[in-house]
Image (cartoon, rainbow, N blue to C red; front, side, top):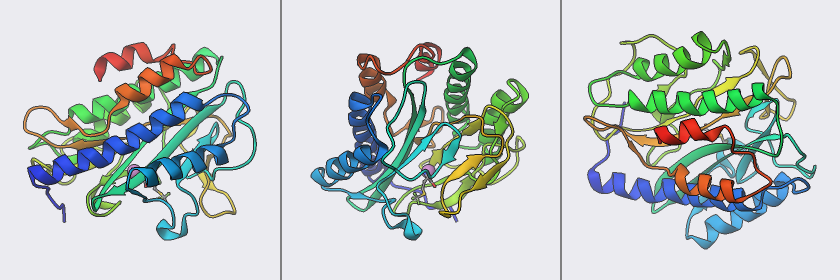
Amino acid sequence: MILYKTDAEVELMKQSARLVSKTLTEVAKILKPGITTMQLDALCYQFIRDHNAIPSFLNYRGYPYTICASVNDVVVHGFPNNSAIKESDIVTIDMGVILNGWHGDHAYTFLIGEANDDVLQLLRVTKESLYKGIEKAIAGNRVGDIAFAIQEHTERKHHYGVVRELVGHGLGRNLHEDPQVPNFGKRGNGPRLKENAVVAIEPMINMGTKDVYTDDDGWTVRTRDGKPSVHFEHDVCVKRNKALILSDYSIIEAAEKNNTNLNTSYTLKAAKLA
Ligand code: MF3
Ligand code: CO
């Protein structure tokens, strides 16, 4: 059952989503070769606690950290670790918070330094696909319209692998609510969306095969072929004419641009869509 939010609750959820955006902005400021994802995890934990919120991933179904740090072939749910980030790494940071009882949950993929054009394109197309999905998050549409738009852009147009095992989701007082929001599907299928449904839309797109496997740690999801994967996630409120994006990439992108260790050369096109 989809739990629709009141306008006041949507406003609270915006604060939750923005706290995640602010935390990701802190990450964008300090990411550089040599830093470890364990250091980022500690920073995010402290930042969230300092803002009177609770890291929602920590202990969720036994997940042991504040952030998911998914580097290169890791699709999602990578454990922070003590190895140094290096030039050309593709680093997805995904995290959630509970603020005033409401969840925020979103992700951003950063590129460290130089990379080949095929990596730049994967980043650009994945980010674009997120906004193409968001465009469909309007009252009267169905979840399949979002799913189709993402799959159309990534898989049919660019022949990337759309991960099947993991999907977006409703968000509210719980991290995972109805409906599931896949990144693949048919137009006109799935639950119908009404105003003030809040969903996390999160394309997970592989450069190569869509197939993934999970490490022995029970969490780390990797691409079967070892090629890179990119993940962008926004928290979105369904509205009548235009979806309301609760999270805020603009502050992350500003910090990303200011950080000379990060490569933003691909973002120009997608940023316009925001
Ligand atoms: N953003 C992911 C999701 O929406 C990550 C949550 S898994 C967790 O499902 F265990 F780390 F919380
Ligand atoms: Co999510």
